[in-house]
Length: 482
Ligand code: C2O
Ligand code: CU
Figure: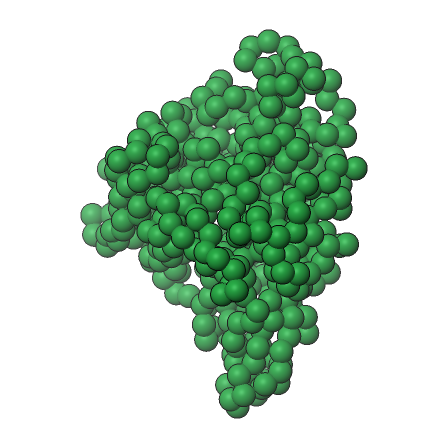
């Protein structure tokens, strides 16, 4: 079985074994009809992408050279209210081109940040102004869509929070951006981005997990408080399965969108790369006690992520708040299933798969030749190179589309659709319990899911795997709404 070749550079406490187990509004309305926007408050921001330093691994380790927005990992939290108009000027001080994608936000196509497809990449020294409305409330994030394995992998990402006009009641609203780094002994980032091993297996999985850019031993909490915790997985390839020991977190939103409040299956919060989960957690422990958050997504590589450490202070209240946990719906059009058009998408390739070959640059290519070109994955039999390609299908604007996605590989794939939010209708033929809205749906090996959405946002939109090495290895497609 292939092994992650990295030695284990940092102290054990900071290490995760990456080993064999792992291998195994204006938008909705035509122009001129955007009613609210004449008066919509504007929210202006500046982001500068460039080299910086971050103390990821703690005081006993050197700083890590990173690429960052405004010098920090994660980049600044952009926080606005639903309905606000965002203006974000992005300046590139890297020595390579970049773009910014506003993951999960239903922007107009020209603001989607996909190089060559929706915009010219931002050259070194240049600035690009992104401008769009925050139509949906929720937990979103931003990251480059150019050379993503390296640019995101070196630290370019940040949270984008759109507050509900009437938020639910909580004592604190906390964001945790989770990331996973492959660090060397000197705490620098291993520069083996896009190597074929990562690309053809489970993606780049590292050896150091950070919360908001830091390896943390503990985070302070207070007995009796209710915390809204927004989790964002910004890792290239690592999936998380979090258990909050002794607590009963309630899932209230997935990928930013409200879901019927529920306890996660088996008490474990699974978050694939690019996904977000909003939790409400009542801190029911005793003052002065600690409880551990464990990540056991890869069961034989379970580790302690962090402890929640209760202050000695008296509990804030003696019994949990009774306030409602249901978030108000976002203005997403409901799919019209009886009149839907249906399409099928098959994911193929990767190690231990059955794919013999696929279309690459217009010719049928066998798997071995594909691999020699550093490619390993296909969508509907085609390997994508770059971001500009023929759409796998064209949807009539306003029509509901059901896509049946079949994972014909031995690997997990979080599939992300740009410009739209979809309902997850079924998994392996069984209706889902919550028909959740998502922009990134996780498929387990061999799993089949059906998703549905109204194709109401015109343009060419990416539909791709968000394990960034799979995307680089060909698991990328576009669909057109015209
Ligand atoms: Cu978060 Cu196409 O990306
Ligand atoms: Cu994938």
